[in-house]
Length: 219
Length: 254
Ligand SMILES: Nc1ncnc2c1ncn2[C@@H]1O[C@H](COP(=O)(O)OP(=O)(O)O)[C@@H](O)[C@H]1O
Ligand SMILES: [Mg+2]
Image (cartoon, rainbow over all chains, first blue to last red; front, side, top):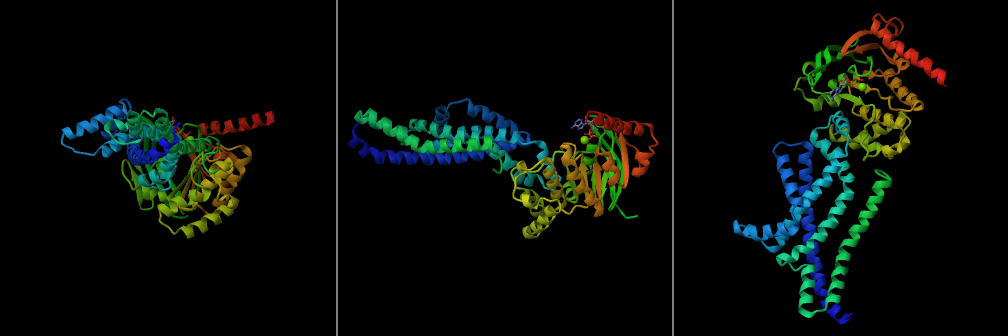
């Protein structure tokens, strides 16, 4: 292990980690938004839209992120939409993550008894208020474990960003290995930075899971 | 006698073409306690659910003062604010504390001042012996406690009329009493109530008027005395006999 090398290239990894994190966070936020919209559409069985959502979910879940990225990265310019690699990365992650988030939110919605809605309605709430104050908070808390698992999955998926020449962690490691053949050091740094990003989310996930399983609301 | 506040007119309700309620008429006067009895599946829950628009009706109308529900029409949101409903399984919101369960609709729907409602809510909780549970969550309460909270939640909307659908049916016997006592107290305060129950002794004690429903129709109605002591219709007698028989059975077991 060459510590000098590690010290020298640490800043590069830091920069790459920040990029991974930045694209990951923005992409995941978009995915959450898409997922919520899809789940609400499925919950209310909105005609036409529910079909679009169903097609989207199948399409998004059954194609690899790499393929989705290629479509966005090489496809969009062909139809006259010019974007940066960063935007493509975010869009790809949002496209993939949206369906995963939609699925976990949907199972959250399904876990809420229909009569909760009636109970709220009988208090004079309109459908917007019922969704916002009664259904959504319950559905979201039920879907938290799946939701956190999705975040971990999506953060890991960011490693294919290097394929559209985004200088993320994976790209940096590959680059340095290619340049200096310091394979061990490069890989150690790579694993180290992914752990820094993912471990906190994982631990949070375990903590939440335990809470949800043994306690539930109000403990 | 007091004015009529709720009128059900020629109410017809079907599920997939199968008639459940058939041309049903009912009037409830202010301060009156109407108890509905009848065999399971006769349409008692359906009637209550039609009264506050949880079920679409096929024809007829439900009128609460100036508000009307008809087939596919009616300002449900407004009428429901004036009709309180308590369900068999409490249906509290599990993600909210007892106090927030109670405050939600008055503050968000009626836009009342939170401080005022809170004061009222705590007073009502005190009345039902649950002042110290205000910050608990529903899952930390017993069935009887949950049901008392559900009643307070309905009361806090200051409804004109309260509907109770077998609110003690899911409770352990020792908790039935605490809920029924709250309802007796409400009757004493001259609250207008429509109560569906299988607790016949309670029905006799609380009711001003008793309706016996069978196959989606009001078969017989009268004072508790008339219905329970001197039922006229054969069906009513049969139904009430079931309870007599049950009582004897219970005694033998214990
Ligand atoms: N959602 C539904 N779809 C179809 N049939 C229903 C539905 N709800 C109730 N019913 C039928 O309507 C009838 C009356 O039900 P209900 O009002 O719940 O009876 P009760 O409360 O008197 O026991 C029953 O025969 C029941 O099977
Ligand atoms: Mg019923």
